[in-house]
Length: 403
Image 1 (cartoon, rainbow, N blue to C red):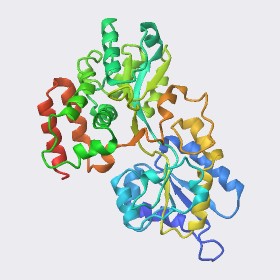
Image 2: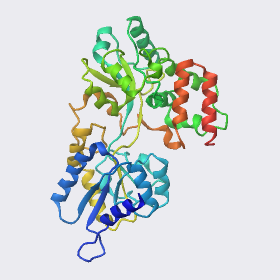
Image 3: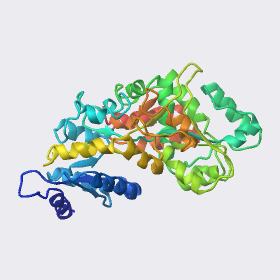
Image 4: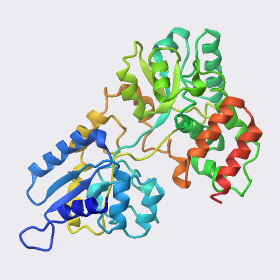
């Protein structure tokens, strides 16, 4: 692995004309499913100028390769990296990335505040171009037949579930055998119950040891989770991600909590109904609906790059509406780049996607945690048994190790 990383780095640092500045700029991607589109964007840029040649690197297990390369001082020039993650924050604080705070020609292409949301010590080291979002998929056709509206409050959400059950149908497609599938829904339950993402993490991650109690916040979280309790399709306790998508796409359940990434898989099943996607309603009608997610295609520049100016020029192009239009038309993830035409495209996601890069999108709560899997399991356990005392105990056991 180290030898391979060294070879890639050597390729990325080749010299031009005997000078001290590398002509080649390496762009390291962690999006294998978008490799063909990213290659098109790179090819377009290379044809548009002759100052540098950008080379796209896409390898198996890119996260591990990237960690090895950074540890060995062989970081790529332009890096697709996730700014919500703890390793990014540590590397940024360590001086591994170029400070982009004053790069107005790059940041000016983005929605206001999009990059600042991922600042480290008030400095911007990353350009977030797209994001994922979480919410609840729903069968719009069935909702209309049953006279059900998208819920604007917890009470309306509860009433919708009751109406679906009273009509003899299944409210949720659930994959309780794949506990990660409940993560977005559970985080949103905490965000809405606590009042914000910050307050949710103050209750979970930053409270005193043993500080997660049965109180108004946890009771409201339980109310959201209770909606899924006993309201899944047959065999939902052991169902996996593919099972829940199939159950929803086949019309066996009318809602499915999940993220924007699931739309492609849903559409592959060719559902015979109109698909919608709504954000998590607040406790009251007056509370804003929320989504949760984080940067997906996001790039930083290595401070060790031998061609920082060339790397900045490519990132400027990558953040242009022309480049990101090509990317969006394939990927469909909400984008921070202004001027990208989204109207009429990926309409299923529209009601949640419009919240991306606004104060109605929270960054994943686990960006402040050292792990997350036990949180997933605790939520599934609660949905199965509705034991709030056991739930708070499990959360304390998990979070106390971080306190």
